[in-house]
Image (cartoon, rainbow, N blue to C red):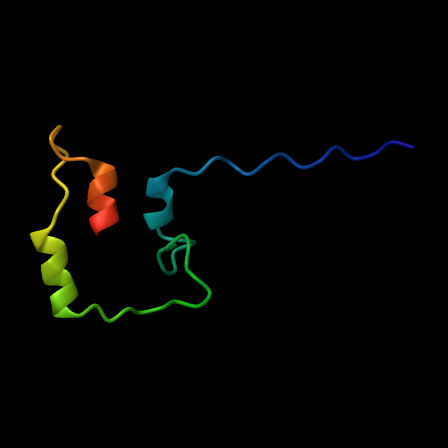
Length: 69
């Protein structure tokens, strides 16, 4: 009883491969969520994010920044 060997794995893909045309049809967009969700971010939230950005300076504690965020 001779068993067939398993098929070889598909060729390894790079990130650039996901933007290539797929069989001459549409571009392969890679991962697409099954249930895409759109978020409505209010201007006040965006303003607050811009005002209190983490700079990464040695004098700024990342844990303290996150706790106040």
